[in-house]
Length: 229
Image (cartoon, rainbow, N blue to C red; front, side, top):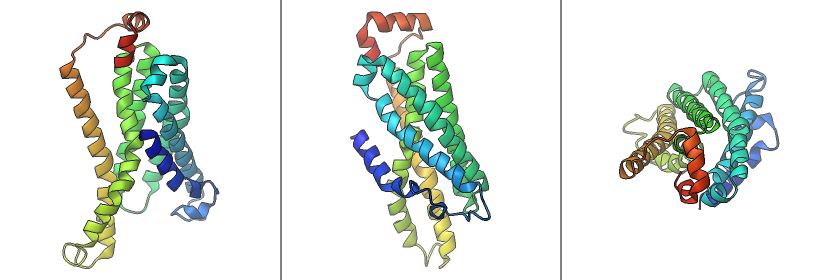
């Protein structure tokens, strides 16, 4: 189901960028010459991140082909999240449409980059259980863009119905409010949900924090542990 959702999302929203036509961006190439290259860096990096994150959370691949899992993880971080987050951060800083939605994108980009980098470092150090938890946070932020598209329509429709009352006929204010709600809600709700799930999992099955050597030994001697972590 996750793979299907990612394929549908990428099929609907990515092809228009593959023409590499600067007119698909919302900022003028003449006034912002670096905007489109940075936008494409973000789009292509996000495409790599969304594609490889499906492999990262596939339990069968993680259990049976650990080397493929690790290589896909490096691609996810180095060619996916890092360039995509950096591009989003630059775009958000210069974004002239709505400071509230721009702030959401800045916070999201910094958080996405931070949790992914920390999870990557934990894997390099051999703390695989902790690595799993942090990469689940990263995965949640990666796919939150799908929730953004799903929630954007009902949010826009609801606020449009308030145009003549709450917004006193000012369409610009209504669009600003819709943009702010559609950018903040999806990723914050998704992130809170994964935190709740991780906390619930930890309380239900408390485990001592093993050293990297012990974790590697446990993974080699007990395949069932690999399934859980």
